[in-house]
Length: 142
Image 1 (cartoon, rainbow, N blue to C red):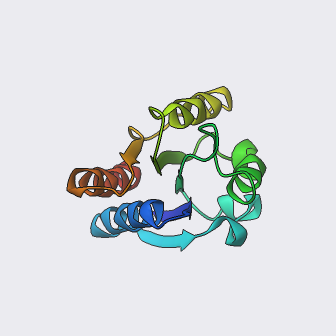
Image 2 (image 1 turned 120 degrees about the horizontal axis):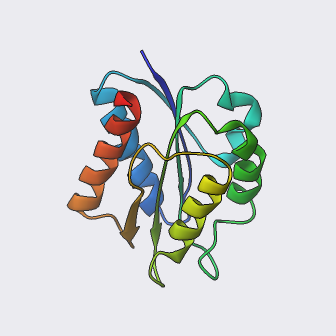
C-alpha cells in the first residue's frame, strides 16, 4: 500500500477542502494517507512517504504563503526528486501565475509532477473537487 502525505496551507478553507478531496481520492484507490499543515511537516518526514501532494493558496503578488508554507517547502525541495509529487491550490486574483512558477521551481529541482496541477478560483466547485480526487488517485497509481 502506497503512503501519501497531503501537506497544505489554507487561509480561508478553500485549499483545505481541496486537500481533503486529494486525500479522499488517494484513499479510494487504496493508499494510506496522512494530512499535514506546514507546521507539522518537514524534510525529515519526506522519506516516510512514496507520494506527496502539496497545496497552497496564492498570496500577495501570486506567491506561496511565506510565513509557514514557503519555508517548509524550501526545506523539503532537495528530497522530492524521484518521489510522486503533485501540486494544488486556490487563488482569488490573477491568473494562476503562482502555480506556473511553483511548477517551474519543481522542474528546476528535478521533480517530475505525477499529475496535472489543480487550481481553483476562490472556493473549489464540483469540477475542482473531482480534479483533486483524480489527482490523489493519480499519485497512488503512478
